[in-house]
Image 1 (cartoon, one colour):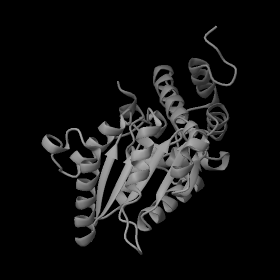
Image 2: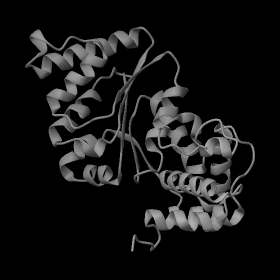
Image 3: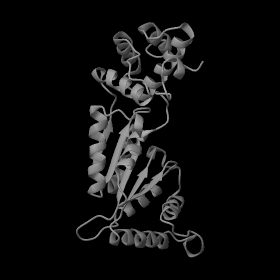
Image 4: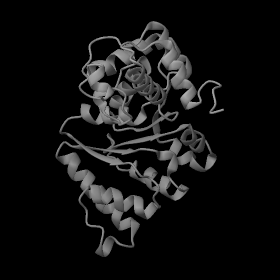
Length: 276
C-alpha cells in the first residue's frame, strides 16, 4: 500500500517539485511575492536570495502564475552561460534567429533584442527575464550583458524587468567592487528566510489540504520537532514529513507522533544526528 492511500491523500503533499499550488504564504513568502510583483510592475532589476531549499523557485513559479497576458516570461534555469551564450538564449526566447549575421556579433544581437523589446512595449507587453540559480553565472562578462539589458529604457520608463534568483553567494558576489555598475541598477534586494515556528502548523496543514486531506495528521509535538530539526527550511520539512509518513505506514501509525520525526531526523543526519 502506498502512503497516500493509507492516509487518505489524493496526491503526495510533500514533494520537492516547485508546484505553486503547494506554496504556503508564510510572512516572508508573502512579502517576497509582493515585492517581486511590485518590481515587475515598475520594470525593475531585482535580486532575490535565500538558502538552499527555502522556496525561491516555487515562489518565482507563483509569480509567473500571477502575471497576466501582458507579460512575456523568459525563464532561464541553467545560467552557466558565457556572455554570448546568454544573449543567444535570450534572443531565442524572443524568437530571434541566432544564426547568420547574429552568430558572432553581440552588438547586433543586443540591437535585435532591443527591437523586440520595443515591439513588446508598443503592444503593451512587458518582458520579464527570470534567471534562476544566478549564483552559477560563470563570469563578470555575463553579468555585464545583464547590466546592458537594463539600458533598454525610454526617457520615462524601463522596458523590461529582470529578476536574479540565487543563493546568498550571489549577494556576496554582487557586493564586490567589480560589480558596482550592475549593483547600482538593482532596484530591490530581498532575502527569503525560513518559516517561523508559529507557522509550521499552517504550512503542514496547507500541503496536506492540497494533497487532498483535510485532517491534521501530525501531533503538536511532532510539528514542534519538525520545525526544530528543519530550522523552518521548507525542503527539509518536506523530506522529513515524507519520511515520517512512510515510517508511520510501516509501523501502523494513523497519526504522526514526535518519535517518527525524531527517526526522520536521525535518518537525514539533522541536529546532531549522524549515520553512526
